Amino acid sequence: MADKAKQLKHIAFIMDGNGRWAKKRLMPREYGHKVGAETFRKIVEYCRELEVEAVTVYAFSTENWKRPENEVKAIMSLFNQYLDFAIKEMMEKDIRIIFLGNKSVFPPELRERMEKTENDSKNNKYILNIGINYGGRDEIVNAVNECIKDGITTITEDDISARLYTKDSPMPDLIVRTGGEYRISNFLMWQSAYSELYFTDILWPDLSPKDVDDAVNAFKNRNRRYGGV
Ligand code: IPE
Ligand code: IPE
Ligand code: MG
Image 1 (spheres, rainbow, N blue to C red):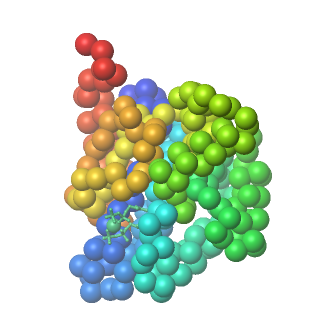
Image 2 (cartoon, rainbow, N blue to C red):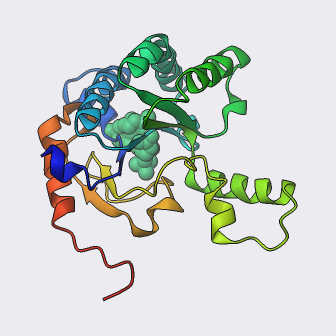
């Protein structure tokens, strides 16, 4: 398994289905996010065992602010708790954390903790990108604005790629969406041009390492042509 997975450099997850998972148990949506956060830790650990170079997770989108205040608060509080232990765990596992998205919307104290986590882990080998206040369109617009600031007058694809939030990762080979929706929901709009897509009805809190194996095996059977023959 580990050998096969080595050809997979970057795997990305749209972690969807927390709310429905909780609803099925007659619990508040917030409970689904809590269990979903545990699943996130487990899956990151498993991907690290597989020695995947880069893992990206979609935790909170630029559109998710539309949710009820209580739910947004609960997600931000889980994120804060995660930051409490993330750095220790990441240093032990040689993982570099990068937050994808515009951080300026967060309170200064949280932003500083995010930046410190990124900075403290910056020399680690494996990458964990966490999309929080992330939107693919926002990312492209931000990259274009960076190009303008850099005085570029005729923008190339490379100019944009070099200014994406994910600039330190290879393009995602495989994007997995849980929760039974068959859409991208503003995730990695630029980077997904030639990603293999894998959709499963499994709700995120239920996702197991075995399910990751299934996705990776499906990926192995895909024939990537990149427009060639
Ligand atoms: C994904 O689960 C987590 C976030 C978007 C923050 P959802 O909260 O979207 O769960 P469903 O799709 O409503 O079940
Ligand atoms: C996508 O899930 C965003 C994250 C998983 C963070 P959503 O639940 O927000 O997507 P839609 O609304 O079903 O498209
Ligand atoms: Mg959802």
